[in-house]
Structure formats: C-alpha cells, structure tokens
Length: 139
Image (cartoon, rainbow, N blue to C red; front, side, top):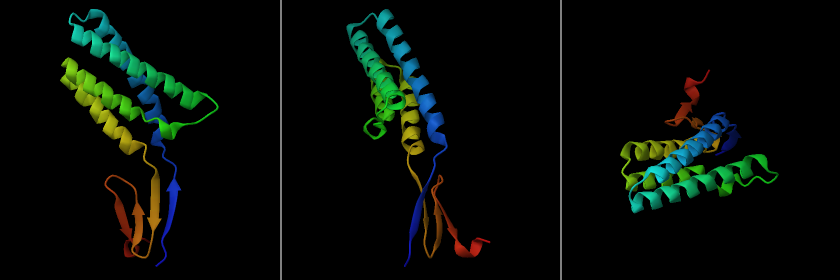
C-alpha cells in the first residue's frame, strides 16, 4: 500500500495577508474613533484594548513580512480578529463582531497548507469540500 503526498503552493495566501493588514488598520482606526467619542468608561476601556491589540497586530505583521526573520508560524492574525470580535461584541456592535469572526474562520481555512494525497484508491485534492478523484474517473 503505497501512499504519496506533496504540498502545492497556496495562491490565496498573499491576497489574504494584504486584506488582513487592511482589516487590522481599519479596526485600529475604528477602535481609536470609538475611544475618542465613547461616553462610558467601559466602552473607553474596551476600545483602548482594541487599539493596543490591533496596533500590536500591525507591528507583528510588519516584523513578519519585512524584517529578516520570518516567524509567521508564531503569529496568527486570526487570533487578533477573534479578540477584536469579542471586544466589539462587548461594546455592542454585533454585526461588526460577526463579520470579524467570519473573516477569522475564513483565514484559518485559507492559510492551511494544501497537500495532495495519492494512493491506490485515487487522488485526494484539498478543495472545499475535499475531493476524492477515483482512478476509473481519471483519463
């Protein structure tokens, strides 16, 4: 029973990385705006945490992509999005929280390594949903 596997490049990774940067920047600006106009102490504190979390996310983004050392496996921008979504949820912005959670889940799927498996049953292709191409169907 021979089984082969090989990784294929994920073309979506660079696009997702760029969109993630813009999402972090927009979140930072909106949290900063909410901090400036918030009347309640609770909203001020939560938005200040959001400013720091997204600011740290942007700093780590630049360190990972433009410095000599690449520590991408240590930093997942999706975690920043989940924390930001929870902060928006506590502030009371439910639609924004849902959108960020959706984007975080999408990011976990988009950034996974794509591996094709070949065995005696056929070829397993990592699409959504995963496809199994049986040998009789392949010409």
